[in-house]
Image (cartoon, rainbow, N blue to C red; front, side, top):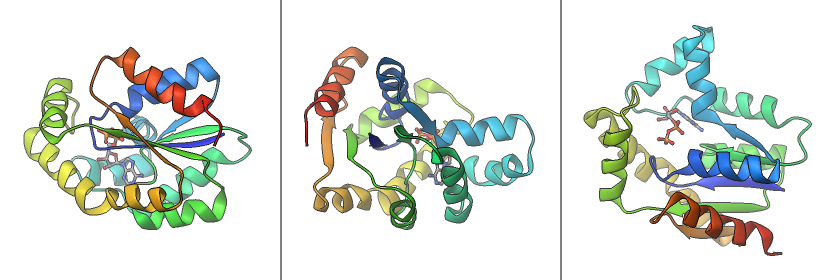
Length: 177
Ligand code: ADP
């Protein structure tokens, strides 16, 4: 199964992708984790990514698409966490593979800010958070409609305990169609 996890920053995509990935033995590809690991290793890609990530901007599509292409090659099943984030990324993804289900984790704005402030990652500073939310609204939110029209969007209430949310996601993944 080819799955996308979609939602605002701080929605819990990464946490849930990790849980589902382990439980069902589906490979998880988290673009944020990939970029952070490149940064830690001081690679060329990491240096480029850093300039965007520390401002809460998106890393250019061409770079992200290449990363995804390399990672999904030869995989029968995967969960994408953090990709696509723009319509262009979604269109390019379609040329490489077919997506079965998009899990959209919905969390209200106020809750998002609280969660990110608590998390305290390098790009979780108040100004950067504001910009990431803005970028999400301007560039990523259109994907909700895009996948809804294709009939493959499944909206999950992202409020509740981690376990409750995993159960909601599992019931969507287990159900046929
Ligand atoms: P969150 O889950 O809080 O949104 P991520 O770890 O997914 O955070 O992403 C952190 C940052 O990595 C983003 O703000 C962006 O700069 C960069 N990034 C991750 N995925 C992508 C992508 N698909 N396209 C462009 N930039 C990305």
